[in-house]
Image (cartoon, rainbow, N blue to C red; front, side, top):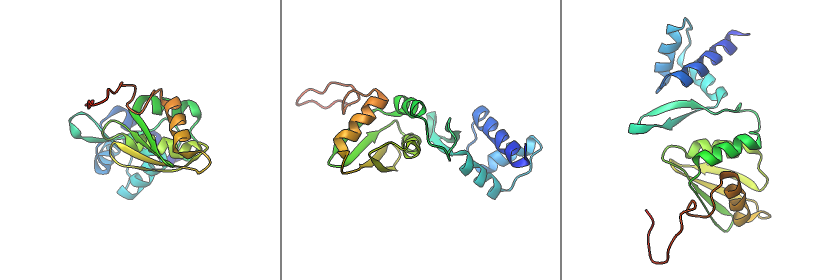
Length: 170
């Protein structure tokens, strides 16, 4: 195993074990393990591993690594797990689909969608808790939204919460 592979394996372990909040923090943890790495190297490793920052309780951000390799297409069962865990609401208009997630989680779902190779999906733009997805003309927003609902288990635009006329569900 190359030193790069060993370093990336250690980074994965550290991120899984500790609340790694920054690249300098990760450099410190690596140094404690006897691994010297520059900030640029750590940054490249995080990118190659597909690490993303997620918001946790208290508003802090920590690194997390998705279960699948970033360069590969996400298998449908992994996409289904990500969608089931993080998607709260799916709505559509024209060829657009809006997906809502808990705060700080939109990029995790968008990344999984981007890597999925899902037919009918042109691309995504993620904010903090909202993802805008663009459907192909052939698929349309309604068709893509139905695919997302099927993958996530969300039954309607309200995440399965029945809406009554004249009321606001908060």
